[in-house]
Image (cartoon, rainbow, N blue to C red; front, side):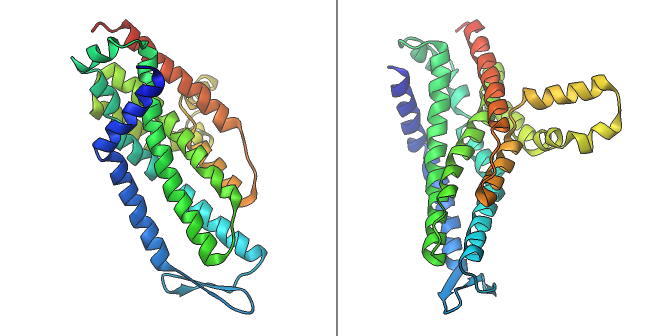
Length: 275
């Protein structure tokens, strides 16, 4: 078994556990609601849009494009945390299950390094999430394109950004899973970070800086900001890119560096563990 085979094995495992089917089912339900709630009618002035019975002004040209991009940004940004956190919840058991006695012995008997085992499991989870995100956002893109008549190619980059955010958050899941061998601890750690810590650190200058002007205190806050993946920054970048095309590589590079550190820490702990 090589790392590619392990990724595909992880993918099949999540399919057999119905994980990908559940994710696809939720996405399908949201898309059905979107189709039912978004009505359009072509008029001489442009496209008349009705959202769940609430009529919007007739749009055409740049206004129609702005409506589509605003809707796409709201969908991608609004569901950003939900999709990623649900993905973490659905795939968080992969690493602890791998470390169970008997299972880990089987993996270690294969011609795979311990780092490759962790990478294969994480990439398998990432593949499942990428396909689900493509299905959901691709479906949303098609609905808007068919109903409004505007095809915004810029939105097609959204699945890549969201998958990068998922893999960044999954680095913390992997580290905590190897450290504790507990799915519960891994999930709670990731949820606490994404729901509470990431927003506080992103806005530390407004929330935490006023508590003290001490340079060491603020330096620690800045250090924590760069230690953890900047998933909030990725979300903001995605929203800005979809709406007006502005793009920043900073959160990508910072998240990549942070994620590599967390994955490396998980690999080091795995290497030091005796099975």
